[in-house]
Length: 441
Image (cartoon, rainbow, N blue to C red; front, side, top):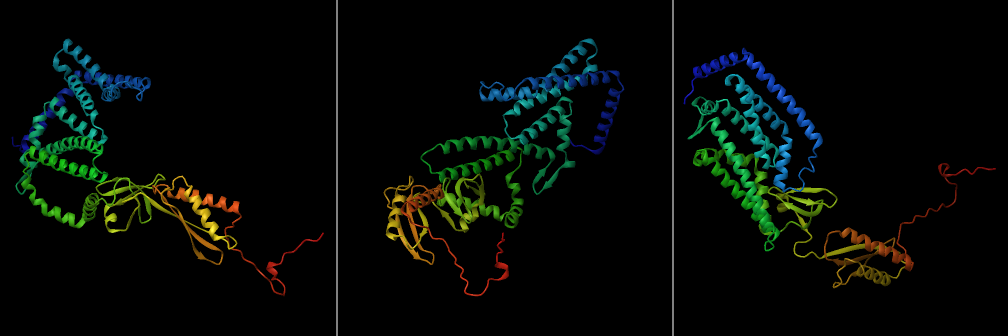
């Protein structure tokens, strides 16, 4: 059906005439008053229900889907009550007078029931934005169908007056709406499917963490590509017609998306070469922590103090990375300390090695070692080394060993050097600023 401007003007003129006839009728104001009364009563009843029903403990013993359904039903109680009241008024007026005199009540009841059904159906969607978008879109379609204008709206959105032809592709608002709706549905189903597959892969003990992440990303990307292709094909868009946009997309990637593409490719490289993987303890620049997640664009490094560093994948490929658990989790701990020259260095090394060997996290199969590294102006410097099975919490281990060294030095009379300065005055008087006056009694 092709629409001309005069057809639209005639339709609007006839619609305005119908509305004018309705507004001048006393039954219009009666129906409008009944609708407002039903809305007020529904709002009051909804407030009373919310004040008496604990939403957190509602149907706690029910299965999760039924519990969620009950909560949505209670939250939409005002809509349900409004629909019931309007339906009751519609039935009463239908049997008391002409059916046409309660047309507004019928439309209001159908709109309320449509919104209630849409809210119940969309309750399975977790994303709040998607819920609002789907709910409003579906309700608009239902409203047009209820008032009998759906076919007109569809033909108007698909007419040649609003169509845009790009190459061999004819774009209309209706086509874009259908494509958007199908894309949302396809991507939602894709997300559910990929989450299910990800759960199965993560539970597999035969795959390493890097392979698990790689498989999940490849499957997710493949499903997204298939979903987009199916959605566009379902609305009649020939994918070959999109070839005209390939050059523009390449230019866009070259100019503005090179960092995103570089991080994406770097992420795939990291997953393939297994240089880092979830659970590794790494140091990248000034950031240290354990890798908690590997994403498409970045990795998340948990510092252990509540912070998480989001480091781009490209930095792990191009910069120096210290992986404390790359091939072996055994870590060498180095503790530097000093004593004065009155101490016996052999006794100091013996005490240090005994303390390190007695540390709870020290590896018993590898003996500690202590060496004298330097004679300095203040005293002797030593280096104590020992192995622990996991680098996590290495600073705590060093602190425990140094505290034990302090106790042993106190017990053996070994002193830790500290700088001492002596000032000698040879003859003459002290400057006035340094003289201290002693009060006389």
